[in-house]
Structure formats: C-alpha cells, structure tokens
Length: 164
Image 1 (cartoon, rainbow, N blue to C red):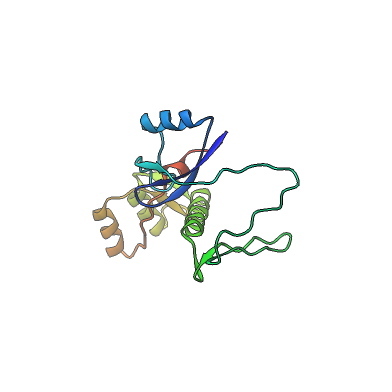
Image 2: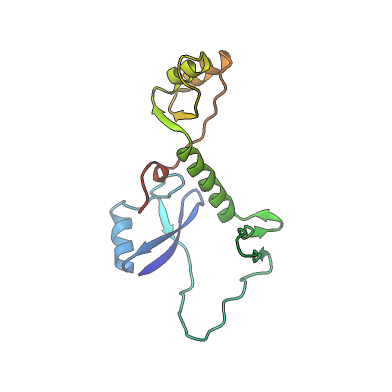
C-alpha cells in the first residue's frame, strides 16, 4: 500500500492511498483523482518521507519548531496543529470538513426545490427544519428581500456520497 500526500491546484492538501505507484499514475492519467474539498482534478503529488516500521524505534519528533502538537488527556480531543499561533491549513481543512459533515447529517437535502421549501417553512406551511439545496443568485436575492435568511456554502461532492 502506498500513501501519497497530494494537493490540488487550489492548495488543498490531502492523502491518497494506492496499491502501488503505478496505480496512482494510472488513476491520475485517467482523470479519476479529485480534491475531496473542491473536486479539482488538477492533482499533484507532494514530497513525502517514507514511513518505516522498525521494532523498538522511538516515535518521530515534531518536524519544526514552528508547528506545535499538544498531547491531550485521555478522552479529550488533541489541539489542532498551529503555525505562529493560527490553525494550520490542514487544521482549517479538517475543521471545514467536520462542519460540512455536521450540516449534511443535520439537514434535509431538498435539491433545486430549496427556494420554494424555504418559503413554505417561513410561512409555516411546512414543518420547521434545517434544509439545504440549490438556488440561483436571483432566488437567493428574492428570499433575502422577503426576510428569509439563507447563506451559500459549497459542499464537496465527497460529502454527498457514503464513504467506505
């Protein structure tokens, strides 16, 4: 199994697992790889060090002084890595994906009926609940003019499918 650090043309970094380097090359050439955040198919392999499993070896030490990792007590989540006191790009991506997964789990997808369903909920013609879907800019403007608050949040395609 080969694990590669990958990035899209927008700078989103992610991991890819492949049976071999040849499998990676074949999937890349076939246009089968895409960024899990933005679905960009312009994917490149980043430099990475191999992981060797050596019995009795000590755990690796942090790579640089600029990146901090905190150990959390049992039962508490570890703090996210930071760079100069701010969340790292990887930590921000993880937070975004966590928030997006929460929204997908806790809202109903009404698809292109979003504007109509938002109006029905607003006028109490339909049960109040969290919904998500698609609307044109004109529909979103009309909803705002009617006093119906909505916001746009593009969701990665990977969140719309079950993950194995």
